[in-house]
Image (cartoon, rainbow, N blue to C red; front, side, top):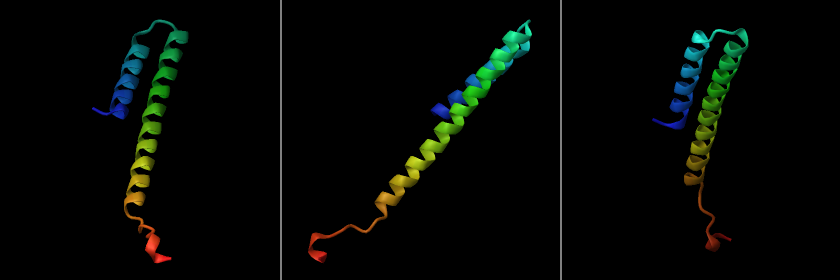
Length: 69
């Protein structure tokens, strides 16, 4: 399980807690926390994807040869 999947799982736990809490204030806090975990998952996915694409681009560059000049 990668970090993004863990973050989504944490968000689901927060949403479950929001359903069982007794006050509107606590419910709102749990929902906000779930939203933050989902945002973390999105950011992780975006950063991982960007890093992956950057590594692919590095591998596919033509090497600059010192003898080519």
